[in-house]
Length: 562
Image (cartoon, rainbow, N blue to C red):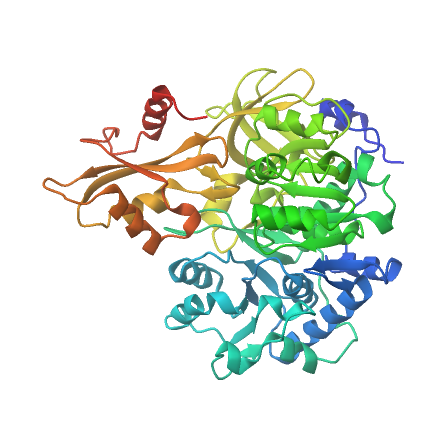
């Protein structure tokens, strides 16, 4: 039985609101993260670990592939501590590679498949990346990268290579350069099924997750093996009041959140392993494909998503036909605020649904509404087990009383080790064991936390974190643009929409469509502004700081946004 010391319980009054099966403290094992897979493979060897377009891999098969690939990595020269980029969509190859790199002692650098060559160059340089595992569709970007940055190890797959019904690719068919490795062939020739047994400590770095736009100086949150283990146990604990009632043979997790981001990595990939759930993998969110895949399964026990996905699923024409209320167990919404009406719609269908809050710096988790217990509209919920959370005055650092607004600071075993190769930025957010989140919120008398603003200017659109400066710095380079300020505008589907306000030079002839096309050439697709509005001047302070809030407020006053 988990018992807290009285003084600890006293500073965590929110524990009274936790669901009944959530322990107030957890004895997290101090082992490398890949031990999670070994346990699952040992106790459920015959159960399907992954499902991908009709092809299944059991937990035992997955463990053996992981060990073989890990030994292949080591034989190829990858050493403990090497930073290896992982640039794949959701597919079995991602799952295998993730655990294999951890087994080999490498540090995974999560890479979004939509990154440009410039994005990759900045991250590769920052981390001194020595290899990458990627796929055929992005090879043009990889070739641009290696023209400027040497990568000693490149492993390439075709996503459909792990679909039994699809023909397997060849190095020649993919046009691989000399010295590049073909994934399926590399795995086939790696036959050693004895675990490497490297001395990996639970405190060793496991993943680097970048948290900002990649212009300027990107920040890579260092997540340790222990961070991953704590997160896996925590998400399993939090959802356990519902999901642990479901027998293991029936457990599934619907995995369309990108595994290249820590939200998908923890709440789908790691949760799937620790709970011995079958990961139903989709490489992208396409509503028609999502609904068709849902139709193939009698039940989906866990579906982590962002509000955009939740909206598309519940409002899809096939929603009633598929009897979603009966099919779905727990629906978790995160990464962006979820409209109360949407949450209620899910509950009206008898789906257990809750939204929460986390950061890359907190291994995706931190504060979430109970699944069974009380939920409050507009609240991100209650802190997880073993977390201390305070709301502090941003000027004095003093803890504020209930109801007063200040910055969320957190102390938890979920908190990152620091930012990679960035002691100055680390010192700004980690102070005496506390993470300073930059989010402004208040706490009510029951311990529920409500975010009211963001001290940073981040735009959250469709679950993607977008920094306005990324767009500003692209548009300002256009020869007919004099000034630019980008903001996020509320949008009922995406959460927020990117809109840029532009001041043109005198005599300019460029159009909105021209600038959007220009952005498409320079930015990842999710960062491209949906709208551009021309203005005679833009609001700035006397020292030139962009007054984004003024533009956002003006836009809201116009109406037409929801």
